[in-house]
Image (cartoon, rainbow, N blue to C red; front, side):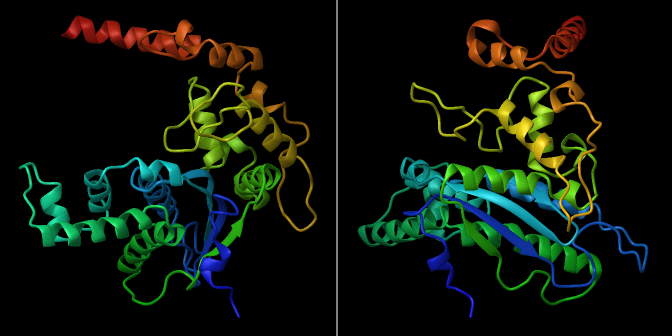
Length: 317
């Protein structure tokens, strides 16, 4: 008998969880159906876009993700402290990105200054408490991720019924070692499935998104950032270095796993060389960010292209 969700997810134990959703139909979530020749590859973007959109609504942050042919992996961090700082109006505004809310919550977020009776205030506060709780609830996060994808897929397939398995699988990640191992496992999924040969070529994964922005000199705003292990207080983030993580993914991907089809070619150069980057350059950029850059930040080539575009725009204006 499956364990009740409230017994699987307990924020007192850990705010980090690995969640997996699987498709129930023979027709793939993504990829190509070899029997019919029909491609569902575009659905990967549906999932990735929806997942990253939800990070702008919930107080739940994404550490890692991978969109596979018939299932998705996400590693989530519940930021309970963040939601406590949101006003009632912000709570309502965020919830309205997903649902219409109630007449009272709509009134609260209207442009005109709202006036409530005492009874309305009591009802509104009760409603906002429910919304506030849902915005840190992994079950609600996964529901808001999966249900719209299922509706889109059913409409495209011209059918009805379940698209996902009834329950998503969740694993509590109780320490930094478990978190790191799980993130690496998720980011390497396309390589193990022989869908990609390197992390930077594995589409619709968090590692590819991180690498894309790493080459530009910053970290993606839609993913929980790497902040290292600072002595001074820092914004919340993953307590290890991005460089170290990319190296770990690259090294782990070269290990041959007997029951998996793919691995990174042992003859491939190290990941930083493949990215045309340099560890010291990144460290210099990271440690002296505010003093190194003014209105724009990036590697030399990126900054040159930015300056050329700025000059072109100035000549047009």
